[in-house]
View 1: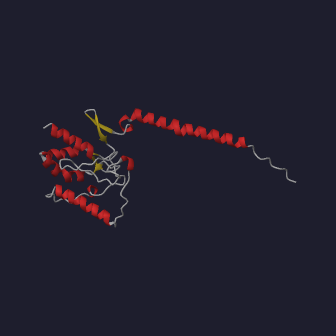
View 2: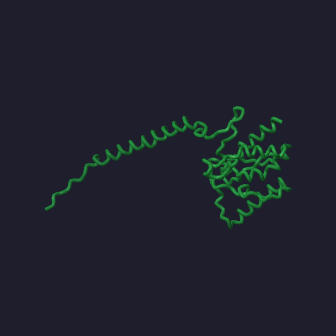
View 3: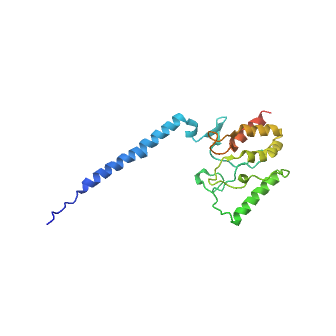
Length: 202
């Protein structure tokens, strides 16, 4: 006859489970976030604070989030499909329109028409990122080619020599990380801020 196996006491099971839960909560929920945030703030203070851009003590945006520019004297960034408004950091996301969706084709055609209307004499094909939204809807960068495509329009609207605008684009083109990771990119907000400063200094 087999001896009966005693059932484990309830507190013998709960106590270790609660202890492990509390310990892991302290480590992963408090200690680790505070430690990583503290290291980031000490080593990369600008990035840890959101890569914010201030001008004359006034917050004008972040290097990480695009903004809507539509005036001919500014460089335009990638379209944004976030809701309820473009470049809404609280609602990051794409339009989720498939390549065969007529609404996507209509949106692209409308964006091409707006670019052509702003610079009708430009014979260069419109760069694709100027008429298609990014997956996040917040992309602050365009390619150097997309910036150069707009250079003539911006120079004309600002009454600036084209060479000055081209030099400004080159100065604000970020190289790939370590020279090999990613593609060259231009931050639209920082480029437009530099453009304002150039125009104000004339």
